[in-house]
Length: 257
Image 1 (cartoon, rainbow, N blue to C red):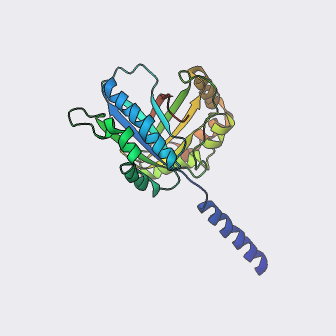
Image 2 (tube, one colour):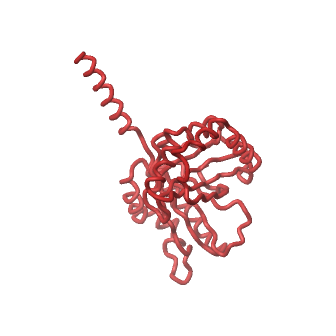
Image 3 (cartoon, rainbow, N blue to C red):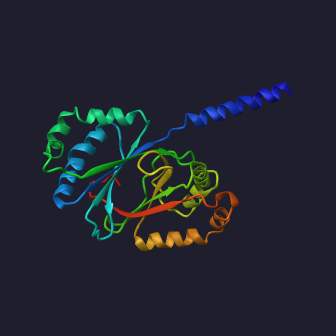
């Protein structure tokens, strides 16, 4: 009996240790806010010719760069940069190294050396996101459509309280929502918890589709799926979201996906 208990304890410890050592991405979602086409051009040139090549050199692959799909008539425009890191410690180290790199200084001069009366952006809003336990790393989408047709849907869910927010995170993981997205081929790129940012408590995720029609068809199948009907009506998952923000984005031509 003691031997069986020892074996069971050993297996449990091994499992927990293995789970804790499982690779996980930490994401930096950098949101540029700007007003003019000239500002956008400077940001684009910096990202495509200086920033992304530097990050690739550092071993940080698969950087997504997106703007809104709709004809945006608001005064403030936004550009989204999603960067997957292998650890939380990498983020400040690599960001500091960026400003010490000779090629970045050369290729990114228009952006880095901009004068106060010709700034390339009005503000940068940063989110630091930790990959979900049931989907810990970034997954490249399997899409074949044109850049103009593809839809990248970025969603965030804020919780009314920290405790209720944790139930929404559980709903995605142990509750089975991630598995449902996978079964219905939503081409999810990442799921994660915002651990630092302007809207908290908050989780964010991104799915991708061949077109707007493809996106609508997927969500119709999702809402009609018996598994979703079961998950969404469980008592423990009621009143756990206070605000949902859904953005429809398209990739920049120089984005890695």
